[in-house]
Image (cartoon, rainbow, N blue to C red; front, top):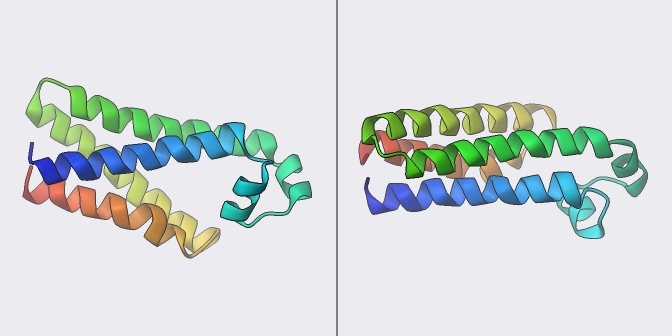
Length: 121
């Protein structure tokens, strides 16, 4: 695996572990309220929903980490294509339905990583 590809996949995984932490454990904290642009009352009402979203972000990150550790390089690449594609699709949907900046914050790093996987290996 190319070094740039490895770094980009790691960055996407770390970003999604960070989102997991924000959504599962820090949803009602001031920092998270600012990041997601939500009011404290709404955060309290949506705490369980956010934790569920965080769990899904954790699954994406775990899949990417698993792909980096897998011994079969061809299968590892398939895993990376799958999980990075999931992130890109989720970012497109999120940017259309929640906040436009999601396409840049989550989608761009995942798209760059995906491009790197497909072109550099």
